[in-house]
Amino acid sequence: MTSISIVGSGNMSQALQALFTRAGATVQVVNHGDLASTAIEGDIVVLAVPYTALTEIAGTLGSKLDGKIVVDITNVLDFSSFTPIKLPAGSAAAELAAAAPNAKVLKAFNTNFAATLTSGKVESAPISVLVAGDDADAKKTFGEVVTASGAAVYDLGGLDRAAELESLGYTQLLLAGTNQIGWTNGFALFK
Image (cartoon, rainbow, N blue to C red; front, side, top):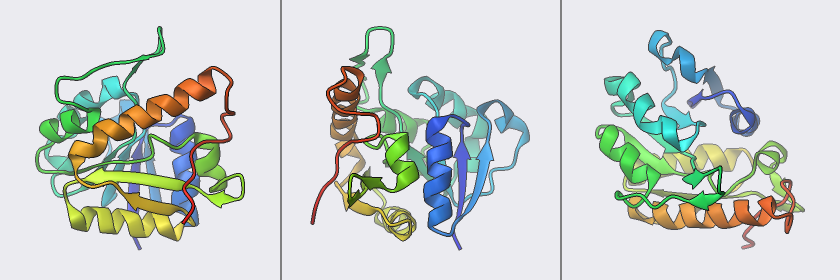
């Protein structure tokens, strides 16, 4: 059985708990503020926190992330103006990979809303989870767990594709934020 540690306690954390529970995984939730005093039990560590917390978390956990699959779910936005932030590294996931060089960093879930992760569906379609990362075995392990939840997983290639995922995530947030789609909808791919 796969073990998952989710860092964060907000809506996305709760939605991911539901998804991973459906998959039959063991789930540990760690409040961001408790990281220094809590052992990270999961083989997969999902960072369900704002972008601004990523490098601080990588610094706090340090070698505790070595060898683990670490999933960045963030969208890089200035929430005061609701505009994307351009990063010198190209993406938040690239920054995280530089801050945690011995972790197997993946980008995923940033194109999914909490409501669809909780329900497992967008309308009648299973949710589509897009993933990017450089470690093929990490993507395979991650994909197997997510697929066990009933979701469809699509591999977009290397971590250098994380920038496109962040752009797609922003597009979906913009559509929902301007009431063009609902927060219970989102993108879904059909095979």
